[in-house]
Image (cartoon, rainbow, N blue to C red; front, side, top):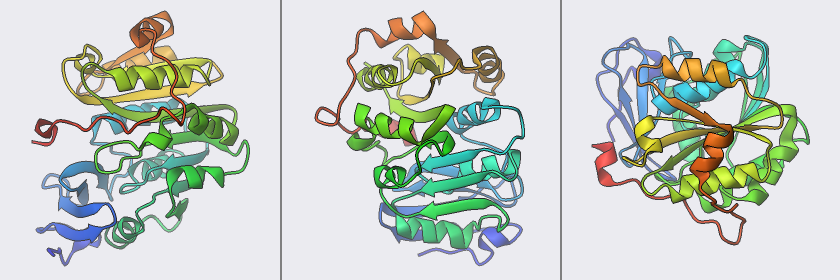
Length: 289
């Protein structure tokens, strides 16, 4: 085990923190350009990046796109009630706490050893209203009160794949139950050519929500490479123009699809129920090189 004596509480760390957790071998690697920032990897797959001095900084492109959804989910700065399925290093919960003070949040992260590691090395702001539950994402979601959440964020990976039981219409039925009227669901989806999983997930969301949008790198949408797409769903109109503007201005510009363009992209894919659900595809080894 390698451990920085400074860890997340010092100014500059020179060593990675390496520790076995339920999901594999976790490594917290210091960011050489940001004194108190760290990247979390599980079995060499990047999971989260956290800057303890600036929790509003989102390094990962897909997390920045989810941040755009969080920013536009109601008036800027207004507190929200959020559920995060998948915790990692709690990057997005920290982001909500920083950009929407007084928000109340629940994080569901199955890996109890990972939660302990992150709490110890990258402690949460004690003033943030963040509760962490170490249970399966679907089990944790079932404990959320009906209509409690303004926002449900799904970013769950076992290794580098989303578990099948978090990809179905039945799962989304419980998301809808937990959402308040006008609430927003946002999910990180990973897929590569021929994008069959991504298309199926869009069809599954369309079977349960009336308003959808997809934010992704154009190369991913064209099926040229494996990557992350951010799916946004609600029963009220989404701020498409603002999401489009924000995604286009990112360091790696993203594209927003919605309406007929998104329906055409889905290509007649069918919704996925529990009985037919499978894990998301494994990324090719080259993704993490």
